[in-house]
Length: 283
Image (cartoon, rainbow, N blue to C red):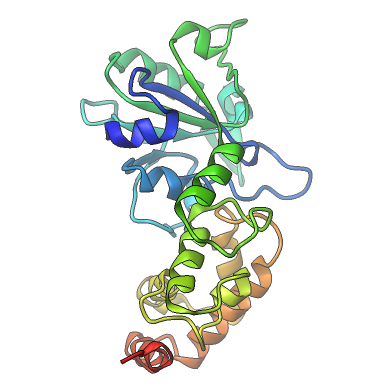
């Protein structure tokens, strides 16, 4: 875990880290890509993530442990923890969430910070460098009350990390979700399409070991009893928290088309992957 902390901050001295990612906050149009930082932090060894339940939506791009702020039990196993929350969600006492009332997360943060020791790693991913929570202080940022704190600019960090550690063909302006750049790197290594999101999810050419197959198995194994006529919309909404605007709808269509072709069956997905393996057999 210390190694992951050093990768993120350049030091193991500070255990409280604020990662500023504007996508966590509200947007001009619909909210999107709030969880885009999660796959990179997971790569660094952080596995526990606390965030709004609607962002998780049942689908996990990586196999992390999800903690719901409404049901969180503060115990000795809480840390290390990544807390993804917007400034608005920290400020509100109670907020409406799709017709349901839920508590604002400032009180959750307050309990966590009071429980946390100086050796416990707490990573706060939010849309500001100086997050405020009235339950903690009415005037001063949380970082002033519970320092020392290391601040990381997610956009700058992920750009540098991808360029230095992956051979991704995706432009950073397409997405700053590490998962997709890791897929692109994998595809390039075997000579598969790698330079756009739609190319990555071309299931007629996707390598059999590519991570792009994982979401299809998720939908088959968990949604088989609730297949919708307009399943593309289900997939699009699932991707919404992970991916910025752009090719999301077309991406969802490609996934839906392969699921339909395979009749939502695991064995037929396996057959399609095996068929694709012939494209990359260099023996």
